[in-house]
Length: 583
Image 1: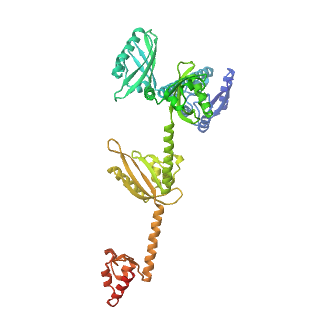
Image 2: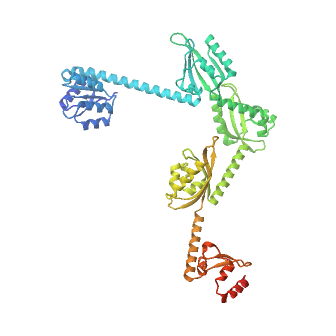
Image 3: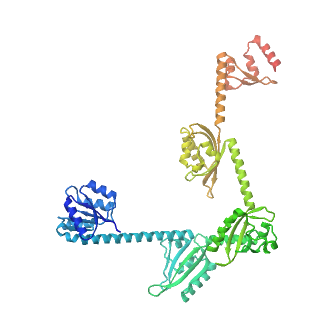
């Protein structure tokens, strides 16, 4: 049951609003009327929504009525708006209709109100239906375009008598054309691979002559030199003038062809395992590669003693059942990983895919690729990465790669995240976030070093401070190496960051210790020194030693004869003899 007609009445006289409601209900139009007489109340009602019809008195004294119309058109443009007024001049009525009013009715001729309301509601409903149909069509076209893009399948139409050809966006993309291209038979032939041009011409001539549909494959040779493999299918029909036309689809099957070529190479090299099976579980044929994978003899499998279901470990059987269901529905199975039992009970990891010989048939062929080497390589890689991560953790050295254009990180090791205080689960931080980790006093130097390395296409090395989120200050030593593209422009930098905070802190502690020792020697007037036990030449003098003897430390360590000359003549021989004796 339809809800009561919800009417918003812009009216300053409650009696007029009540009169209009009674008039409508007399004509079996059940309605709920909400009356407003100020701009504030109007705006509140418009914002609340749920309005089916707006009736407005043009002669309201409190605010401009055309403004009320404009507010309504902005808030709910699809809701009919009818002026019901005692005074509405022709010029004003025309202006109101231009702005968007549906109709106007004079209060002196209220008999026109009901027909005007019914007509306005009918037109509004028709507009809504058209809008829904247009939106549905747009969605359908968008879905169709997306489906074509995802499946690499475009559509086309060909009117034989006029030569007109119509292409969808995906067909234009397949042929590497823009939307301004006007396709013709001659244009299509110009992009066909020279070796396939006669075949395509024959198919076109036959279709135009016999009016029969077609289904064939050929190659494109595109302006950039690339090759595409296409499958074209079409059926014939007649347009409204009984002229022959073809409607069809063109599918880019390049990836499938490449995959088929790889499969053929694997089969020819006896690497890809193949076995023929039926839905009862029997294996009726197998090549040498498959027999080698599972280590069974041909007789073991073809005798029926071993079924293909027996080769599958229990935990993989549910996946096989889903594959069989998929196979029955589509005729093929997308490749998936699983394991097979070997004859000795060990397992072999494989990638398997299947296809039925005929749709609805009982027999299929399975293609099996042994993944043992790949799995071993993956395990070795995981082990190597674990060792590397542990080595980086122990040495506090991280590895990284970042792209020069935009500064995006391409690789950041676990240790890098730990050093810089980022969460790896949040993804690789951008350039600005990485820059924010650099100490404000070191950022200018950091950017200058990197910009110079980019400009000179050279390595860079620097030390700077970073500020992790925990509030500490860390020192890092960074080395970067440029990677150049074929045109010798810097594409990216690869390098390492080492946390040298502990080393810096140890160095600072040593400097403080030396400063304390120097100060103690200065206060106590005590110098320290070291000399060679054989030559008795000085190896080290403290600052206080230089001060005591009056030598300039900037000139280096004094020779033995030099500092002996500073000893009083009466003590010189004794000091010399003691030095030689202790040496």
